[in-house]
Image (cartoon, rainbow, N blue to C red; front, side, top):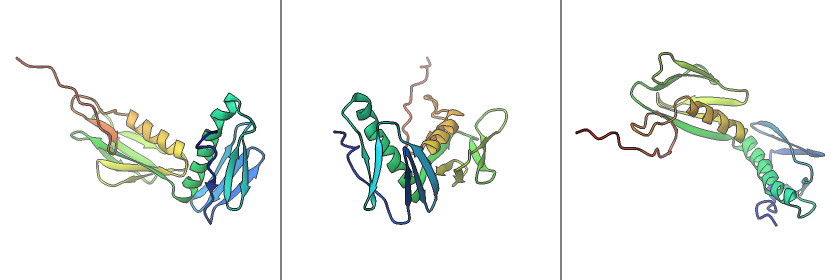
Length: 179
């Protein structure tokens, strides 16, 4: 039995869960999310908690059991607390300037500044010229936007310049040896 899949998902007060066939819709104080659970898996609601069940011990059912439970749990966390990914910029002259809650202008050592627009449901918060965060209610979307921003200038191994996640350790290399 899947250790993660068999755990019940507690539904906090203020969160409404609607199950319509395979579609699970979660509505909370921060917004609404919906997810269609894959075919053999079913979601049942009883006494303030959700339970994800699988019909048999087939390989495909086992694979989807824990995944489906985690995705539904992430939706509940998203509509109550939300998700945030912090990033930092390292490099001389590298900086970020907010152009509203859904737009950033990044100076990353290229000949031009880069404007990055957030998709719907994602917002940016700039703390300093080199530290900012990506936040939203959908965990997958927040992670993808943060990865796309990081991809604009990945941290390089010689000087460590670029965009990195907060707390990320960049593996450094030694430059060429002079005589």
